[in-house]
Image (cartoon, rainbow, N blue to C red):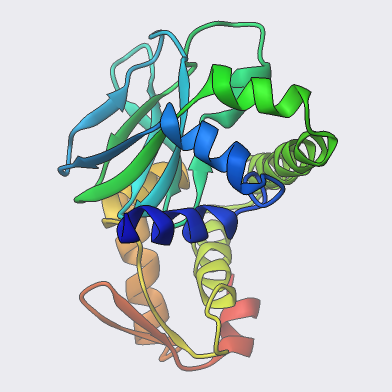
Length: 227
């Protein structure tokens, strides 16, 4: 019961759930499942019926599709206190348009689309919260398309590092890469070897240092101007 309440508090930190009162939250949780999955374990495959969306308590999940030639294209890696697949509730297709798989041991909630939609129809604040979430995601996707289409590989890597740096809550200069370089390279639509060469250039220029997945930015102005 204590864990249940802790998870309620974590869920309420996300704007998709903040407008729910206790009774509505209890109703949503009564049809939800808390899952603990291992690295490499799938949550759903492309084309499977989309009955649920997910909230990550801890760990990380990659969202990807397979290209016709069998290569994996990673669209996003979802981390702590983030949701994914919620847009499927409002799409015409009844099936998932991508696949989801854990990239490390992960704990998350599987949340019923039908229950959330029922609550959505009776709560205007919840409706606007969902619209806000989808607008943010759309803006992110547009920015990614611009970056992937118009900028070179070095710019993509530099912008990725700056984005990770900007997420630090304390204004620090060190962060851990959230996933393996192969996944980051796939997300940026470059080869892993290209990603490694760019990181090596940044190290040689004494702009960053690397210790495993730990990146320390030594000169942010030079990083921002690096091409």
